[in-house]
Length: 461
Length: 61
Image (cartoon, rainbow over the protein chains, first blue to last red):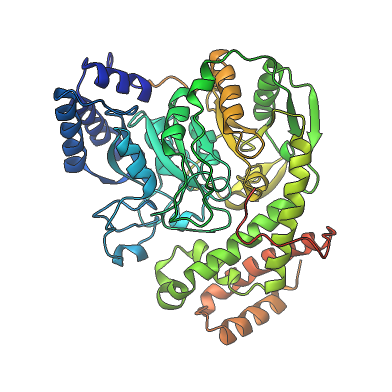
């Protein structure tokens, strides 16, 4: 693929100018998927005919002088909890295979395609998104492109593998407790978990309605911002989606900027982290001149409350499937959901009330700051199948703990840009956490770091 | 940590009254998950949240 444009921006520019065709780009992506997917297990469905048809239509439109959108010819793929017309929406399960094929694409797919992007497939994920590893007993684990013996992280594991492995420049995922930020960290790519309510979830299979976010993965900040700009806007199909009009970020990346006022989250957010992870955090903090250190009080309680809402709302969602098809769940997912169906209601209400309390606390911390930076994960990618995690000398269950730095932040819906620090041999991600609706600041800080050469994917070999 | 035997008994009883299909071989794992969940719930009780604080079932900033 040497000489071919690889970023979304470069592909769109080349297709718009006619220096390449959308068909050639789509064929290139499909060839990469055919070659690499057996190694990465990122895709559960590859949409060859649809992708070629869409690409031909774009080339035909250009031939007649029709203006092409900002993502003209850019191949992308989606976590398989997004509705794709003609496919059952699996959400990582075998149970959902019995659902009728989706009649329409999810709203976010429609928005990307309206901007000229080309859907090439649906991506592997942890069952029903109740996962931080990227492993899946039904479809096999998605594999980390940097070392295929290692986890991608999850639950958007296929999305991170597809982008990290260079199969597509853009992918969509979802993040309830860290399912964009954890795989972005372990696979060494950028991810965006926007403000809760920013992007409509219409046409996606839910997990925890009060915590579910959708967002993109990319290999550059510019691509991430471009995708985010196209994805924004209200939609009546999602009751939680804000009525805010799109607030484009891409133009802000070109603006000159002064010194950032950034604080570093310590205490809970550094406890148990590996020395290399802490070194990455310090390196970025130093580059941003972040001398202020903060401890976020009650972060452990926020994580507990997020866990409680997840297990109980998840159980409510899946109750009929638990009663009728319990044998067809992955055992760990089934047992968590069954236990979630037994939790007293007062616990759930307390968790919800604590959310209001913790939100106010986070907003007061962010008052006067541009951002808070924190690690996304305590360590680099573990081995596939690894059950335990060494957290500061203590051996703890990996599945429950690798997302511990991500959960308190999504619990209160704050926007986070996940940036990869290219450590050797494996990368680690940081969260750039900003005030509600200020994804622009997070992306500008990420852009600053990218221009300094401190964050970005490791070069593909 | 709660008593594992008590948790298994509680889990068995709840499964029965709530019509949840917990097979005997799943019981220890489900009971353990429930014990973890209830232990996490304990941490919420340590934080004072005012009576007037509204719950946020659909959360917006």
